[in-house]
Every structure is written in C-alpha cells, then in structure tokens.
Length: 66
Image 1 (tube, rainbow, N blue to C red):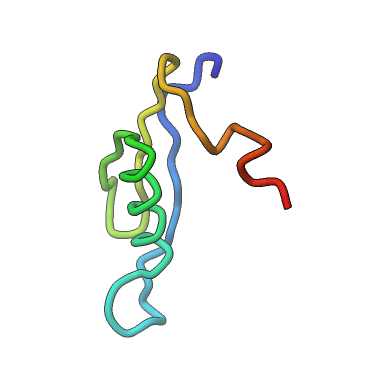
Image 2: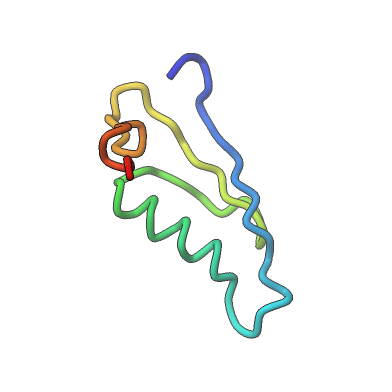
C-alpha cells in the first residue's frame, strides 16, 4: 500500500437529485461491507483511512473479473 494513509473520495453532494447523494451512499455501503474506516470530510467528500494490515478485497483481481 505504500505511504498513502488516507484517500479523499469526492462523491458530490447530490444536489441534482432529490433526497440524498446516491453515489455517496453506495460508497459508504461498500466501505462498511469491507470494514474500512472512513469519515465524512464534508457533504461532498469522504476521507478513507487505509491500513497496511487490512486485506482489501477490491484489490483481488479475480473477484471483479468478468
């Protein structure tokens, strides 16, 4: 994983959708499923905390192969 400790994901605020930001909700659901720590930086972005000891399933090429 190298020296990257946090990753900022800009989801947008969802102001063009009525209700909540669908992209942000999907990203949060994924992070929870993966057991990845995160915090809301503001209404349009998330800070994801990366941990070198965590095995991230999205890095498994076979899991997402067509």
